[in-house]
Length: 397
Ligand code: PMP
Ligand code: GLU
Image (cartoon, rainbow, N blue to C red; front, side, top):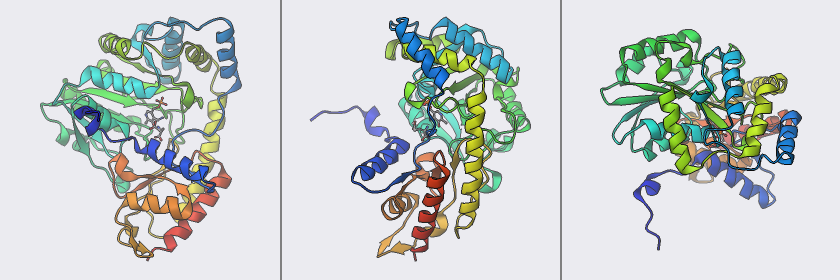
């Protein structure tokens, strides 16, 4: 029998991936499952991006690339950051990775030592706390509530900081809550970081284009802390490129070089063909992104109205990303045919088996009162799924 490392034994399986797998398995048995568990746009990658990949193959972009990515791609990303976010980065401050996920992992492994504290506002995306575990850091959570639109205040941040705090780690727009920090809210957090120069910030901005209200604001815009901010972004959500595996980070040269070194020992670089496609994505304009955003907005409004019709559910109105994170705790303690629903995990299993709708339990995101609904699905599927959820919940007593 293999004796696995303490590291892997302490790691929790990704619940987003697990629920998507359970949904697929049930569907393979012939059950009509509606899968709202996975955070993946249901659109195809735009044609001009696919064409660039085909061309890349024909032109034999099939060899190892520089670890941090082709210089042309890194330059295209730097240009994007200037054009869309008004952020100045040289191309050698960009490190391209196999998805934003690897960019996050690179940054954490380069910044966190065993015992370092990493502040993470809850709810947070599933992999954050697990990546901190891999680096043997200690996650320090700041709880938020639906009433505060799941956003932390400067006061809460200040209270969580200790001399051991090394990193602050958040996403805006947020997965799983859809909350978006305004420029003013970020400025308030920045004022706290100015007082604590030992803290770095990882700003996960992968949902920047799926923002229904404000223009996207990055915490890296504040010159006083910019050198300590690692901006993480990618192509999966904006360009419907989840399977291509491409993301990136922008940081100070020192951090970028460290991430390049880390990646050089782990994956070398992301796929050469994907990288050429990435250049086309950066240079191709935002038309397809805006089309997807418009579709997501319609779906958000639809799901919001349908959720309001379900008794006992409490939700915010998400301003970005493509998730709802409703509080479902009023159903805890109820039963169906003698089976008691104790928590959000039981409820998501119940909804999978009874309503054939796959969702993710909130515990995976650090909030055990909620479930996450990904609305990256057609309006027809969403309407049917919410109807099924409503009916299954009504059968609990
Ligand atoms: N950050 C957040 C908040 C996410 O939801 C995801 C999931 N796609 C990622 C990072 C990772 O994205 P990818 O690795 O596909 O670029
Ligand atoms: N980020 C997506 C989600 O939250 C995809 C799954 C994953 O990478 O964990 O569902």
